[in-house]
Image (cartoon, rainbow, N blue to C red):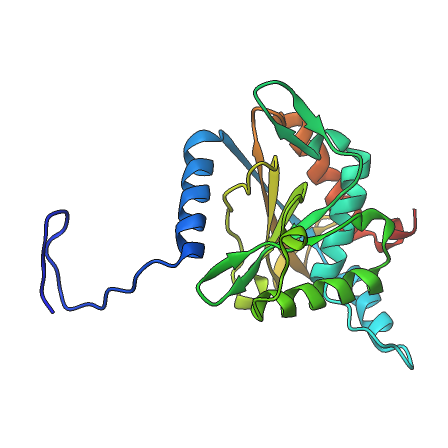
Length: 239
């Protein structure tokens, strides 16, 4: 069909798909977030080789009933970094800034027709195997349309990972009323300089967007510094 649209003029052939309730909700919330929240973005590169070695050894353990992903490590590392820099685990309201006692991390999951963010509660007090199992179960329930409201409401921080699609880096829109979101890119082989010599490493780019009303730039930088330290030295997961 060729329609004379009052906004777009004569349009090429197309199919008009009515917006679902989910699509309308996503559009409304993200428009409000992008318009009303002063986003502050900062990026860092993280070397993954030591973490990948630990992951390989854990997943190769005889009798293991889990398969830990890099994203599971990221979720745990975020919770640990938030414990070290708790002022990044925050939300802004007109009356007060809210600082949360624990890391309830929302995980962005793509589903038919949109995006949903199920929440893994109290990530800092869970082991990698438990985080992995819960993340997988929530993702399956999300894609099957079986999540209950209490499973996707009330997160304090969001992690969005597009690395599995080969995306190296990207920025995300904050998931209100949360104060921050972390965008996780793919781990790729890149040249690095170590001790003055050219070498190579598996490097992943992380980009954090924060609500500048409740999280200052220096605070966000302190958080990303801790996050990088934890991911690059997996022994810190034991601290």
